[in-house]
Length: 513
Image (cartoon, rainbow, N blue to C red; front, side, top):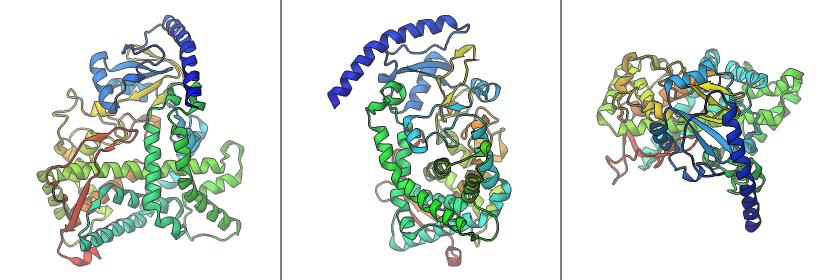
């Protein structure tokens, strides 16, 4: 089988080399504006053999040589990398509709079928689903109504950490936060009703499956760069994604089946407002032609929300805690503010968040240095456009290098240093809304992350609780040695997970009960 694949690949490369050079020369002659400059690479393969593991850093280095907009031929696909606030503004503001499409990789098509909110093409279906999600789950009114769910999960974190303290155990921060966020999202999606046997293994199998799928989404795949070879699945990414999906689908199928059975019986699950799953299932039953939705689409949307609400949030909280624990002065200022705003006899409430200005600055600085999605989700222009004087051809894959912009010395003072004061007391016009193109941790334009409001609340509440109620130290032998290196992917995690040992910070034991 390996020889068969190799023979087909060799034949393809010989034939495609002629087509490739012909197409390049023909395209360059047709365009009024030139396509961007960039490294030449090899025939057919382009720059693909030269890609490095830390793609965000490599793209930044290439920008220093070729400018803020440059091209890369990756296999048969033309990629364009943009690393300038003014040029990103042209993409997400001036030509937002043109660049509002996605180019889903093979792994995304296996995971969601491309009919979810993240990967579906820009159009009426995407607009309807995004509007429904924001209105029914993430509006200010609904977030206020679901506060008790988030508060209960934060209290569970506190109790879990108290058990760790009794046994003297250490804590893997990202795992702790992932499970907490997962429970919050489950409660908001469908009230948290699920078979206990399935729930018991969510923290391990489910998290592992989600993390691996996210990794596969960001892994360079020959099938994506040479679509004609997709059937061969040379790297086995399609096969691996298919292997992981049953663990995720089992949970979703269980919940959907139970909810459909309850709805069919005519029994009301609960008094009060409907949860998001019930709204989606009712929309399916209505079968209105212009708003039709089926079970695969419902599952795809639920997967989006679960992944977006867990993996990225756990990642940024782990980064923020790592940076704070790495700087004793920052940690002292965080805890002094918590003492002043919350008090030594109280637990943190969401009502305290608006007054935690320094912690807010710490979180913003963490997003600056460690944007969870460093290249955002690549865009796919629906027609050729001119950006920065260069033609960006229709169908090219466009990367917005937010990581590079967040560390640009022309934009930021001492950009490699962790300095929350740059955001303290509203310094500069920096928030998460995507209107300042020097700071875009959640993206910008039509495809900006829709979960910003929930992410802000949960990150602030969890970090405030962890630093207000607990002191943290590193395991013996790793003191004063927090590894801040990165593992590049579509989500940029820490290379070495943060493991720390908690102890009570406050004297009132009732606060921990």
